[in-house]
Length: 406
Ligand SMILES: Cc1ncc(COP(=O)(O)O)c(C=O)c1O
Image 1 (cartoon, rainbow, N blue to C red):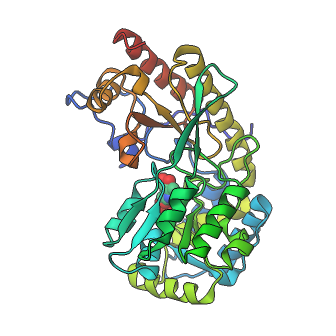
Image 2: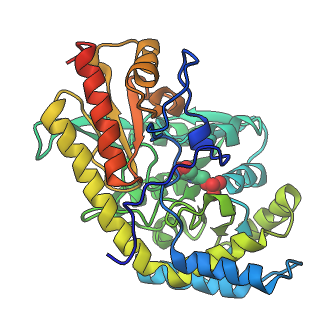
């Protein structure tokens, strides 16, 4: 291994959102050995190649106005072509200060107050904020949850889209947009071509614009392949919005730089005009530097990261299979966020919350925050050194035994 993913770093006291959120409900301090497994960033430093480019910027010293759009866009186009077989035209791209800001802008640019926007919960919470914060109406179509018997004693969960319900929602005259999470946070699905094509046709037939958040698209396991929504041209007739960023792939969320891809000229100019009003024409110089470095130089680091995360994924799966086979979880096809159902342990939501923070000191994301279908569930971020993951799982299991829950 060229890169060290085993090194343990505490981010306590450095304004990390994930670490600062880690508080016991009874007010007692959390021990220094306790790590959080919540917010979707990684516990690994950025690739040395990216750090090096940032250092060069600092060494150059002049931090005035810069706008190196073409090199950024060509780096991104090269990346998506190599990794996902899609080479979007550079003309179609706009830089934005994040995928979430892009969702907000898209809602404002393409829908009117009061209109309905389809979301498929359980889903990443800011999808709701982008809709309700702009005084639009979430039209919720819950994912369908099934059970499969996987290769482990655990009953694994399988999530699919509810196409009939999506069609019924899309037919409502005031429903004009669908926010797609592809791959899906938190259930870890990587939607296949057939599913996406079916979704695209439903939306096209009903004049519903799909805005596809593809921020997790490089974090894939096993046979999973990401299908960029922009490749579904026969179903969409070129009308779609894709938003993505290197921030999940390369742990650059703090660099706040993302890209939207919009092929349709009319949609693109509406988006650009709205984006200029929302967030101005410029993005952060360090963000741009990190963006380009990631997409040009980051591939060897990502390959090793994916191998490391795959082993973490297996570790968690085997842990549940061995110790708590009654806990169903969603097999991770993509993202580094594992989704599992603690309701077989028989706690109320309040009890579960208190048990995890106070007894187990296992800091996860409460599934209820992801909307319908999230009750009883927890989301576990596995992007951390393996020893840290082992430690958290052990602490959790010990607390489960001590409380006589299993
Ligand atoms: C699906 C999804 N979209 C967007 C984001 C955040 O995007 P950004 O930091 O670029 O606004 C996240 C972060 O967890 C996410 O999971």
